[in-house]
Length: 183
Image (cartoon, rainbow, N blue to C red):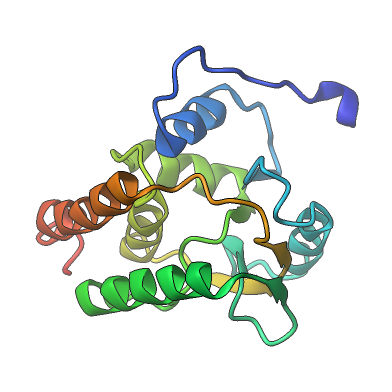
């Protein structure tokens, strides 16, 4: 029921991870917990697709939108594709994750599992998603990609400083989680 939807506004921008942790803390969802980028780059009908996929499979804790899925429709300028490719290569070098596409901003999972994973995250920047996947794998949670419709024609809010911070955060994750998650 959409009437039960609550919009949370942070007076100060503390980052994506902070906002997702805050939302998960306050969420009363019993079945599914979802987060999706708010810039409308991702078609929100992807949430319905996510629910349909996970509803039929008890062995999956969460699904994530993937630009790399063969059925995805992605409009993206070359410079954004290049940045995405480079970030994915760095992630693949540092981590042995079952996905190369950690950054697409649609993730939906079983409420209980999502709350557990999100509660263990520490990062607030763009590397939050990588941390979430590391935690999921360490907990033995399974996840699968779903196709999305993504239009990245708008200007990216990610600047050079944020990109460098994200890369530094990847090394922090690697260092902090190395023993904890057998990285």
